[in-house]
Amino acid sequence: MDDLYIIVSETGGYTPVLPKFIEKMRKKTRVTLKWEPDTENYVVDSEKQIVTYTQGDTWRNPIFSSEPLREQITYHEIRLHNKGHLLFYGIAKGKNIGTSTFLDSTSTCCLFTDPSSLGSRSITVIKDCTAKKGDVLGLVVDKLREEIRFYRNGVLIAKGMQKPTSMEPMYIVSWLYYRDSAIETCTVHPYELLKLE
Image (cartoon, rainbow, N blue to C red):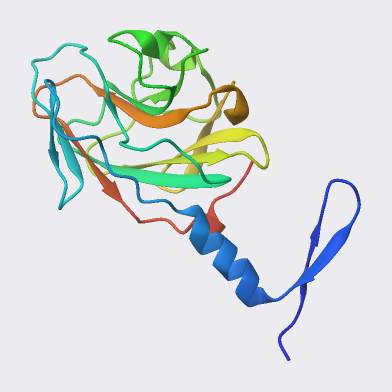
């Protein structure tokens, strides 16, 4: 017979569960979201899940996931193509936001891949958040723990200041700065290996 795991609730109750159930829960957490279709500022390759910024070295409106985040735990990763710095990546409260809303911590919770102070408006930085070509950025929206966590190459580097439940409806969002810079949705680091602290 399989060993049992115990899930303990905050109220002190407990539930015995099989390892297969735990594995099923983990698999449900990674959500492959599609980006919204091509916009004025971005070209989306839906087959390869690559978003390319088509404007020139300036901030414009962001690109969003096509659907809001509905799961209790959402895990999303992107690989950086071309230039890695000057990119915002995180979540937005709705899609009615514009060019510089990444500065408004009540509307967005975003990691900034540049060492400037812009990155500390909506997150608590744990480690240096800079990123380069080939790096994989991860985003976990955990409604159960009421946390938004950011990872670089599987290592925790920042946490959001806002609770996920205060940011609904939530969409994944990204601003790219350099012309022809691109991000690719990917699945690299297993969710169960990510550290919470």
